[in-house]
Image 1 (cartoon, chains in turn brown, cyan):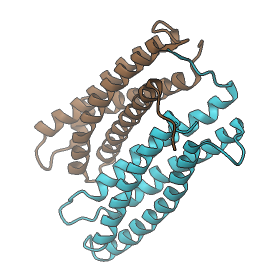
Image 2: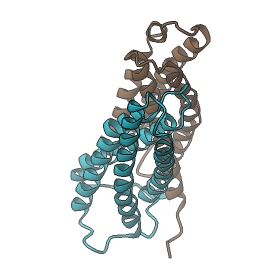
Image 3: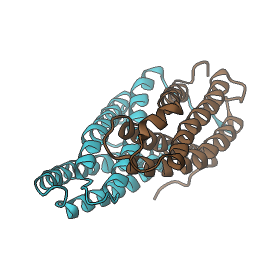
Length: 152
Length: 152
């Protein structure tokens, strides 16, 4: 028989599951980016991949923030103003902003490009590869902060 | 009020690898499932699905599994580990077998489809896609078990 879970267990589980969902959304976005920029002829699939990403980014991103802040308040030993938590909050904004911009470039391309037009050029115009790379780097740094908790 | 858990610093690097591998594994499994079930105007998803498994799912699984073994050796649970480690090992080891099966299925389907100009291998592709989603569900349970640590 498994022991009942505490409030901390639930908060942490939802926080981490939401983080996995955000990384899944970023993986779909990166997959769409690679399919597009390598001119694989899979533009329709790339565009359909970016339809799933906003849900994962938006819903899971909000859950990460809510449950992360709740954990910081609830756990004795962590404070919201701890440098690693403040840095993570800043990185959350960077991830949301850069991921959102990369997705917006795909959304614009989906509306504006006609069959036969160059999706890669449309996506590059919106600087989607750069925003995608920034989002990946910010996720990596956030994960390092969450594991190593410098200064905690 | 919960007191912050303090981990020895030696656990951080293997834990980082374990979590990073697991996050990319979940993301690439979702990507593989979507690719394998995508409708692509007579073109088979097998070749692309095979690449996602070979270049995304398999390497991230290896990083996740190596990280898991490394963390466990640092923690020194011995033969009688807690329930959540059992859940982790069960999903990881059965998952390894299923990932290899998916690689073989999509590889065979890709060969068939290249011989028949995109028409063959549909059933194998759908089976691999279904297994991807099954693995995804199992890994969501594993992530919950790893964070909530039931039975510990």
